[in-house]
Amino acid sequence: MKTMLAFRNPATIAAPVAVLALASILVVAGCRPGRPSEDTPGATVPQQDAEPWRVVDAQPSADEGIRVLVLHDMEGLAGQDDWHSFNFGDPQYPHGQEMLIADVNAVVDGLFAGGATEVHVVDGHGSGNPEPDVRADLLDERATQVLRDEPFDTYFDLVEPGAYDAVAVVGMHAKTGSGGFASHTFTLGIEFQINGRPITETELVALSWGRADVPVIFGSGDDRLADDLQTMPWIEFVTVKRATSASTAEPRPVEEAHADLRESARRAVENLASAKVMKVNTPIAATLRAVPPASLEMMEGFPGVDYADNSVTFVTNDLADAYDGLVAIVSVATRSYSRVLIERLRARADGDEILERYGNALMERWLDVESGRWAAPERGTADTSGRQYHGYR
Image 1: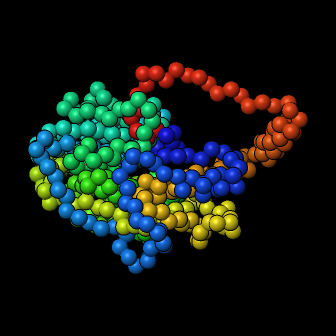
Image 2: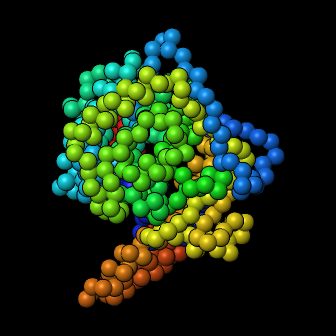
Image 3: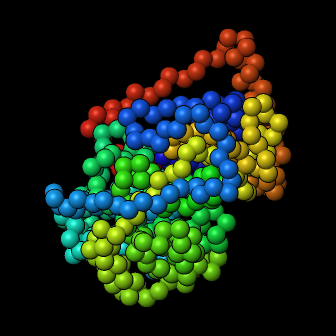
């Protein structure tokens, strides 16, 4: 997925809001065949005082070795204190890649030291780089990058029983509203709630892999994420910096942080037998709450929508469907990003002229369509044979 400021799913300017809103409602009922599910007949709205998920013992089998998936983000890196470093296209992005590979390699080294026999690395960041954020030429040669011939969702499309024995997450961030460095959930101004509880992306990963009885055993990021993940006390977590705002942080000494990453990753594998698996309780009340620059205000009063306080909620029995529905609603909430553009335009001396020309262009497009003078441009037929996809883009 293309990104804005290195977050997933940016808004496209000036989309028809009502149509998008209706589309998002229809999408939430869609089903993804072939995924592990948590079906419960007769879905009803869950009690809000009920636990959002349950925790069960992992039952790993090391008969065929220990396979670990490393999923990385890019906001929770050691030595990092500037958001420009995780934004593809920014002059600081190459330095961000260096910080990322250093963290990932430290964790990979620790996982192998703890007894892992196979380690795969997948891109969960989505910087907009057409190549993986982790540079293949610098990656520990013992690790393998996850690449596929078709686009895939890093959080859900890799989940298969028996594919991995454990998951480690690296360079993660706190959830929206936590006050962490670049804290967010999925993209700017978005909060995901499962059964009434706001969740981090790390918890989302754990719930997704919980469908296949696979535990998350390791994580790294800032101190606010460490607080958020008190819900997962079994994981080995390394705090690499202290967040002082969403745009500033005080990193620990980098060598010290890397030593902790190695040691904690080693312990995580050695203690795999005591790890826990998170399983969502059904039926699932999935809520998306929007905060600026996102907004769901346009959904108020929309027929059939459970809207309140800039939030939309729906109920499903399947976690993958909940995720699909939340992502669909994200596409509505992020349309308000264009307000920032309009604010900037109005502040320009020629802003009113630009907006007037835009309004005229909309009118002319409509008139041309109604008059039969306009035809949609043909889509390009670029050759994608041989292309490999690495996750979020």
